[in-house]
Image 1: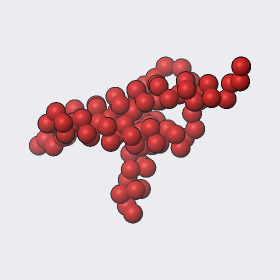
Image 2 (image 1 turned 45 degrees about the vertical axis):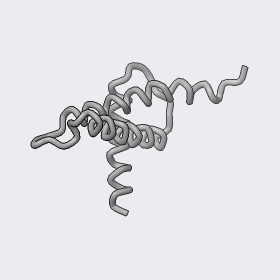
Image 3 (image 1 turned 180 degrees about the vertical axis):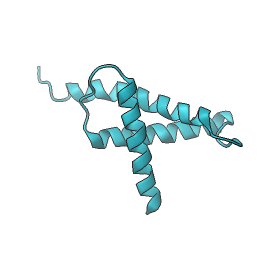
Image 4 (image 1 turned 60 degrees about the vertical axis):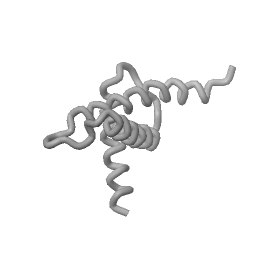
Length: 89
C-alpha cells in the first residue's frame, strides 16, 4: 500500500517539474500530471537499468535526469493532444 502512495508522490513531483521546465501553459489536469510523472519515472528507471547506471554508490543523478527527461517529453506530447480533444471542427 505504501508503494502506491510513494508512486503517486514521485509522479506528482516529476510531473510538476516537467510542467515547470516546459514553456507555455499545459492545460492538463493534475491527475494526468501525476500519471505522466509516474510513467516518466518508470521509463527513466527502465532505461537507467538498461544502460547500467540504475544503482550507484551515491545519488543516482543520471537516473533522476532520465526520469525528469521522460516526464518532460510525455507532458510535451500529451498536453497538446489533451487540448485538442475538446475542439470540434
